[in-house]
Amino acid sequence: MLRSLPKLSPLFSSARNPRYLRSAQRFISQGRRPTSRVKIGAATTLSILSKSTSSAIASETAAEDQIQQIKLLTSTDDNYGGVTVELNHPMDSSEFIQVLRASVSHWKQLGKKGVWIKLPIHLAGLVEALVKEGFWYHHAEPNYLMLVYWIPDSPSTIPVNATHRVGVGSFVMNEKQEVLVVQENSGLFQGTGIWKFPTGVVDQGEDICVAAVREVKEETGVDSEFVEVLAFRQSHNSFFEKSDLFFVCMLRPLSFNIQTQRFEILDAQWMPFEEYAAQPFVQKSELLKYINDTCLAKMGGQYSGFCPVSTSSNFSDQKNYLYLNAGTLKSSYSS
Image (cartoon, rainbow, N blue to C red; front, side):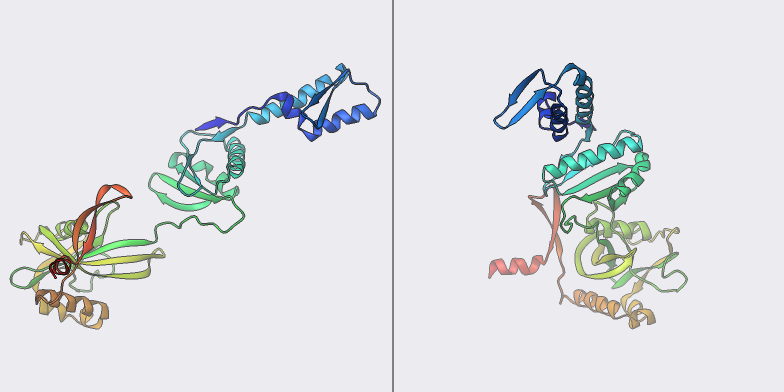
């Protein structure tokens, strides 16, 4: 959590201290004779004063030694010239400010730039101290708050918090060309009578293809398998000033019996696609008309979306998905 600054030799620390030299010169000018002289280096001469002044010098040296004992926050270097601090142990606010100031000064001497302090919820009492020292909020999670600070006298290059929320909508069609639709029990469409595709938000660490299957199961009880991403839309200022990425996904049903989740869903059914598309709300929406045209083209075999391909990368040890047009890619290999 904390570590001490390296302690310097009292003699050399004091000898290079201008206040010490001025004090020595003042005693000399007042006619007090030094008992001896010690030459340090090639340019600095230090007077060893008489016994009458030894207590004052000792007090000054002790004060300097106390400064040398100020603790520093334990930090980890990041890949961008900054440091990250994870606080764990309780600390008095006034003591914390001293340690924080010494740490920032130390990082500045090392040429560090951004400072990230991860503050767990049980240390929320230190937020005010950090803000008063110039730190600002970056993001919050259920169990911690992240605050940041920019040391150099230049524009900050600390990246902003996550800018987008990711959502999915699932186009699920059976062999009768009936589409799986729901009426919501809450939210924007509550009480409107509008039938819509099952939709939802992708959880943290969840893949788009997995989220689409999960949302269909949760809202309707229907099991399905992911086929491809048909299209996606980006919008802005949609959720607490965040942008939104919405992926229209095609799924193949593996079961057909509907078991509605009553907490969020009022009703669900298999509906002929033409009936779904004929709803006045759908007809008035340019976005939904484009989505419907895409779905119809896919049904007619005239459109190909993006299939997930499991890949690895240099940025993560975990497997991830690249969404691409597999059919066109195979055709390009054979040509």
